[in-house]
Image 1 (tube, rainbow, N blue to C red):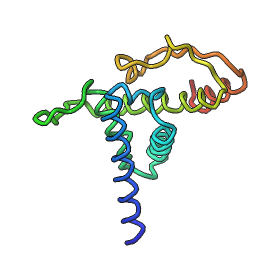
Image 2: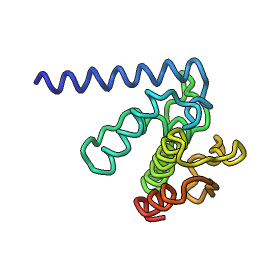
Image 3: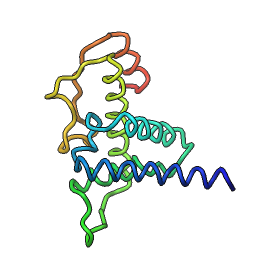
Image 4: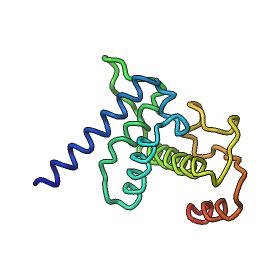
Amino acid sequence: MLVKEEEMNSKNIHIDLLNTHINECGIEGLLPQNLSATLLKIISVEFDDLQGKKDKSATVILNTVLLLAKGELYSGDDKNIDIEAEEFIDQVSSYGLAITVEEIRRAGLIDISKNNLPTLSNILDINRDLIATGNDGAINSFMKDYKI
């Protein structure tokens, strides 16, 4: 029982971090390039866990994608978003991939010009083009791992 309580407390802390970040930065703060190192890691781990089916809750990444799908922060009277399951899965995948790319960019293995960083209008687009330069080995490894 203690483990479950610790996991719940951890999820609550993560949501609190996300909410604080949103309050400080607005919805643009949810773009991978605008996330703090802590939030980037939290979302990255959740995405990895979600793909490996270790943690189906993935509270932070799922809330983030829902906010991005809506395109604005929730108002008090509008809390519903209509979205098809398959579309939502694609959006989570797109966002998770953008998170992974941002980690690689911050590690200095690739360079992405400011014009090619994700925007609010394209972050959830499964067909978004990514133009990056850098270490060919890192890029090839990334493409192989994600079957691109």
